[in-house]
Length: 199
Image 1 (cartoon, rainbow, N blue to C red):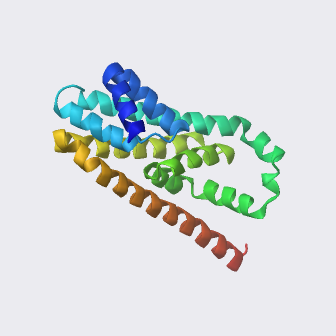
Image 2: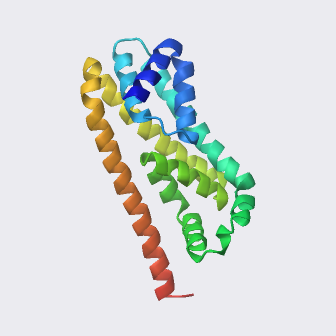
């Protein structure tokens, strides 16, 4: 809760600039409690301290730019790093990369709702060179829904947002675990199917 309190202090002081910086850095790499913060921003919007639609637009743009930054970094330098670490020698890594490339749309979209897995997904998408338009489309759709839910719930509960933040974080964690299980099960199924019915 200390991290969240610090973020909220910064948010109340610098408003939309802080909102952009926190969401962007969270999407790129830093594991901030962004969902709880968006819940608070939604509540502040109900008190007219923030504009709801402007906050949503900033969250969508910051999230998408953070995701694209991670994607671009590994698209440019990822192959060099994996070659240096000899990851490309491992069969599992090759299978994972191939399945991610094949199932890019579903994986990119679903991982938008899995917090830290989203960052890993961005890096992996860049590494296996998922087409830019595919990544951008499904990333953007997910990034419209995900912060929209947090802001809307915060707006609806208003002053009581703090009472719901713990429950919201637990619900977000459960969704993240479900998404991880879904993605891994899908990849495992596709790999098993490929070995069962080789081309």
